Length: 142
Image (cartoon, rainbow, N blue to C red; front, side, top):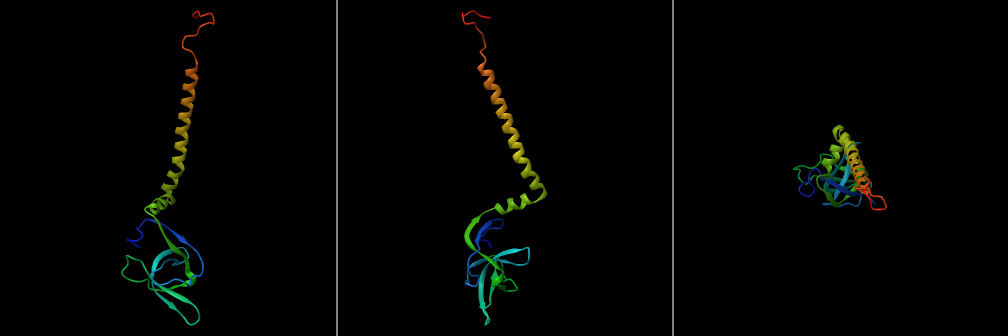
């Protein structure tokens, strides 16, 4: 969908209302198969006599349309126009083995470092409260 939506971006979509209401030029998200969601722009709307609506779609950066028209029942949401660039790369990495391990280790390391900092600060505070030269109340050095 480049240049409008950069590769690796996360987009915000709204599942709302009647999925037969879209027009040419609208951007929709639909089920390509059981596990795949695709976001494309509608290039043509076909309404059949029995009330079904099919959408011909194409990615903005693609030369050809998707070969099979999308049935309105497969449309899950409409693109809101909100895009978060590059977040998709991070999400994909976080879902990998290495990414999951790193996502668990980073908070652990941060907590460990914060604990060390807190302990050192507490020790310094305790050491700071002890007078260096203890004197008796009479003012004589001990």
